[in-house]
Length: 637
Image 1 (cartoon, rainbow, N blue to C red):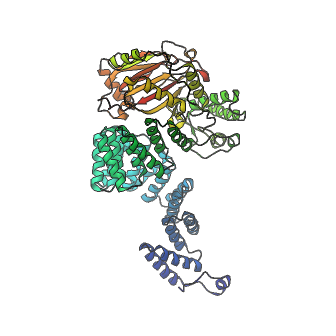
Image 2: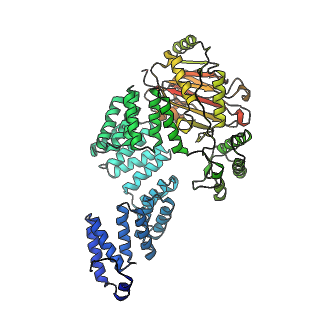
């Protein structure tokens, strides 16, 4: 073919298209250049062919693939779409179009395209695998697992499908299944590093830390420059409280990939545990500079700032993280525009939001158009199955979702919670007696009343009532964490003043997390667990009149300590293991009845749970507790 500029209209009319054999030779030359990595040369030939034959399907397809490989996704999708229209039954064309759409983040279109391809070539394991990836990236994990399983039914040794099935199950919280699937991935190719690394992560989630460490070491033996495996190894070593070894693993990851933001952030966590606060802050700042849109990096840096007493910088971090997670407060104009989503809601969460929105509208803190939002929520609750649990998620139809999709679990009202001049704690606390009771107890536990001064208590309770920050849907209660909006000047002030007022209890233990939980009057609270900290502070802010049973509604603290070799998941959420352990020990738990402004201070190694609840119905009667965790559970060993 003669090379030159694009043909004119006259050329197109007067010059016949080149013969097929000429086109074939040109296409073969383009493919050769393409395979050799000579992108510009291949692109020039593809363009020449398309000038001569604008509808040449194979060239449209291959030129589209080249553009996708070069990151020119708009051009890639255009070319690949044209190729697919020319040959609508060509599964390979559809698959590559799906790849480009997925790469562009156009999940729904990618899923639809892959689905068309699987209908044409139902026996192609690779296409089912690609469909699974698109579904997984779109957050549709259950259908993704089905696609991966279909790929494996067609090709039992399809390593990517086996690995990604394990990752999907891991993301769904099905840890034991994930481990079994990832063990099979290791069997398929014992010499591949990635399956060993993925298995290590899944084992860590199950609390099998020693085996997780071995899997990750094996991944690094196979691939010494595997930065993600080195970082994951650091996470396991940090869980094992081998902080110096964790530091070395994170630094190895950073040496391999100096711009690995997660490794910098996690290194900061390890350094904070080693009480090297300046270095921890530097690592956190580096992580945020590398990846400023990762809320976990901002949260970790914020906690490091808190440890260093830099509350203003901490609040800036938490605030930025909150916006990344949940967006900015909606205006009246924004409540009409429904958004795409999985259309899943939790009934007891909707019930809470109805009560809160009506409360805020009645107080003039939300404009009256938001009443329509509450009415829409109620209409969904009205059609929910009568025999379903309020804790079981339900699907909302598209029409109703258009009414609430832009609003559900989004910030509507974010009042301030400024620090209190003069301090937040009750000045009349008998510090010496409280510290003596805590330190002299076997185990360490003490509770007492009137923790906060009246103004601080009222300000905190009103903030919990007013702020629409209750995004975390738990098993019968709602949570708000530092990066959900509970990181405020007031709450950080309370934490700092606790450490300063009770130095013999807290010592060098720094705040590492805090949250508030809000409960439903018809549901029960938190099950038995222990927390990853040295000192646990738990106090209540709802007025006593809300509690129908003054002898209950508080906290049950077992005097049995969580075994030191248990991983976090085991002592925090493995109910069967905890029940079996507690049944073997001679334990008479301490039952602390609910009182407003009562605080329980205890060793976080102690198993504890919410006592039975019997609170009045009504928004202002919802039980609210605040938890603050200080230090690491291993620091006192």
